[in-house]
Amino acid sequence: MITTYTSYTQISRNLPSSLARVAEKPDVARETEYYLANVGKIKSVDDFMADSRIYNYALKAHGLEDMAYAKAFIRKVLTEGIASSDAFARNLSDNRYSALAETFNFEAFGAATTSFDKAQKVVVQKFERQTLEEEVGAENPGVRLALYFERMAPSIKSGMEVLADDALAEVVRTVLQLPDEIAALDIDRQAAFIAESINIEDFQDPAKVSKFLERFSALWEVENSTHTDSTLSLFSPSSQGISTDLLISINTLKLGGK
Image (cartoon, rainbow, N blue to C red; front, side, top):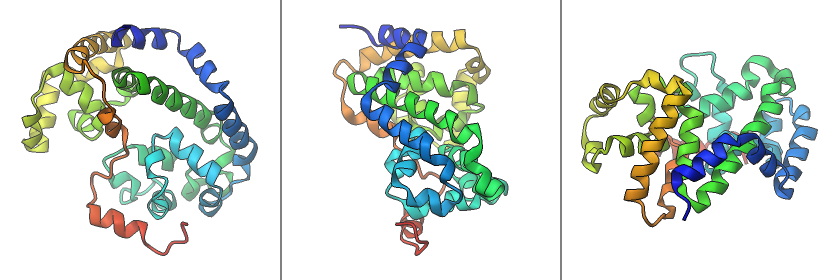
């Protein structure tokens, strides 16, 4: 059987062709065609929420597909934007929400928001990459983790950012061979330990990231001889930074997000 590292490197080294193959899949091509033909017509948060195909495409592109049901929550993220330090998205530890609010920054740019490349071409690129990672993850979750870590590595600036993302944390914990019990430690102590154990700045160097993922892949093979679907939960959007009760109450607010 092909190893996790071999599969990861084959895809990573041939990423353009891998993404092109994904883009040509009928279901992907169909949704992308609709998105590009219609996203420019979206002039407000209301428009965005009203077009389910645009909405679902954009959320999947940002890794937030599992939060599509929480329309009032997503509406709050987009309505408040990212300019203010008190903005809802900026106070969530999962930075995927801030990325969504930055892409669809109606608060700052109004009707012109969807005319920018970041709301058109870049979203399509993200959607195709997300689809690729999900596809390979169905066969080997370790490959998906490696591809995701490779994509996110340049944006990692601290141990706390690693812990805020369950998928990144899984890769780092596997490499460092950390026991499950470490999760019981104070979060600041966990972050400090990660920062002391690895050089976060190394994640800016593709060659060092590759070596890091080679070690991850080898250890993943040892620990996960039988791949299970449990890894999928690592990619579910996090609402860390707010309570479950608040998340539920926000989602039931009468904000017109249906």
